[in-house]
Image (cartoon, rainbow, N blue to C red; front, side):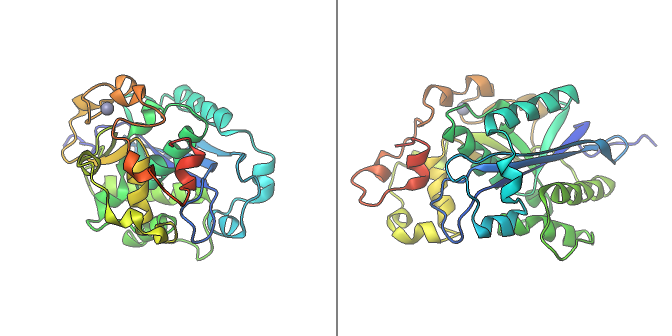
Length: 300
Ligand SMILES: [Zn+2]
């Protein structure tokens, strides 16, 4: 019998991104402070031991990490003090992907939620005024593959996914490379059990919610910034690209934006950055309170 892999990709790149944070405040200009990745070779269903990426990034806006940030990410002040800027680390990451032949249609990113790419990387790119790289616009969300319900706190996702596959995880806080390795084991299990692993989330320039152009009642609630469930509604309005859930991904559409049917580098979004053509002017008009998250990235 011929071995039929349950994914069209040769390499699956498990990616984890950590950012600065402030406890119970979601109106915070979160900056990337760590990028980690490990690779699963699909043909042999093996983790590529010599192929790991792990770099810390120096935050610029809030250079001092909060106690809560250190506690939840495992990144120390010393780690980031000696780190390079996001621009340099991102370039290093891009070179690492290219030199290991992890770019293009034969590879896909694997994430434990939509947050790391959609929210964390997109926001970081906006903060420093660079375009969201095309490579970050589609991925496999493990949460969607394994569960039907909405995701919970992103910091717990790795543990929950590991539990589902009886993978032992230490009780202490996990570092980003450790999380990547655990998620890689989840991927190995899914491949062994013939789960179909393909792109299931794509960043699109068009949002059905935003297209209605109607103010959403919740965003007038000033408590949104303290509410974990409400804050993503804000981010969906403010961030130019939003995640689009894809069922039955067609490999011929790899690298295409579902919002405008153009390849990512020609997506109509490009003309509008950092704002977007579904710009929520009503959200920013006559506001007494400042939306720091949006202001800091020059969205308004
Ligand atoms: Zn587009």
